Image (tube, rainbow, N blue to C red; front, side):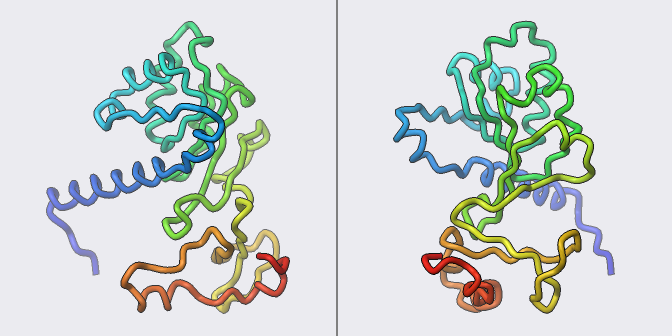
Length: 212
């Protein structure tokens, strides 16, 4: 049965969903930046929602690693297309997360900047791993494929594709992702029932190296 929600409730739910996507995109591990004597530049919410000012921030702060949702980056693509001086950007990596990435939407950017400076990295993840599970660095061949490629697991995680009964499926067959490894949290705070439902024993543990 379909339920028609009031428009104000629909707008509130959409705004909440957008905030959640942005929150997940902002959850990054800053230890690496600080250990490498780098600087972490965090834009205020208002600035992050003003594409022109945000683009200027990337230039003035010489930002080298940018984490954004694909929809937010699409606004930067339009501004960048109107900019004549490509040398003002110092980006080395653009990391996407929080939404499915449409590779074809990056075509204008890639035609101007290529795929090496900066590299474009698509990451997929869930809250239970805070936040990323897999990564994929885009290549020219990816633009000939259909769908969004999410890549391979990060070093502290393992991904298994299984059917409804938890059995591994052959390569190329759709299934459900089961994620395991040190990068997975222990469970939900004060939600033992939900933890027991979602965090099941890793039946593939015996196939992994002893230390994992």
